[in-house]
Image (cartoon, rainbow, N blue to C red):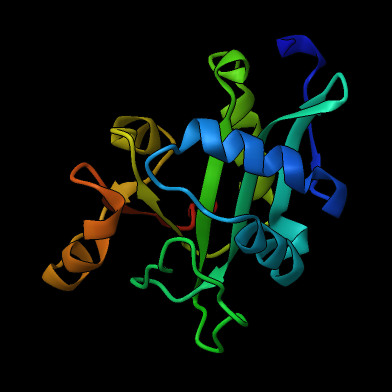
Length: 166
């Protein structure tokens, strides 16, 4: 399946597949279909799926957001905030059979190519080392730690700064 997968823009027709991948990738952090519908409507240019053979094997969702703020899990945003000085990488999720072949890096490259602002995320499922290898660094404060509690004991807020031109 690996070689037949390609990243492409997410469409409304992909949402059932996105929900199915999320259930596998984040069983301890479930989010309803409505959250994915809303994120796609709010930021369609930074929502992607990894698809092939007629199915979704992964997805990536990001949207403009204030640095240092963490959107609550499984909650509709209503709208993007007016103060949005960075991007929030809501999810990068792959089915197990799509992992390990560079698919995550290819999706991130697609996202990074279109953004010249800091990108923040919450690392879950003990994935901090993966995110550090992608250029993200932990950012902490007592206020952030309190907000991370619903994400589990290994959750870390991480930020990737804008690479400086060479």
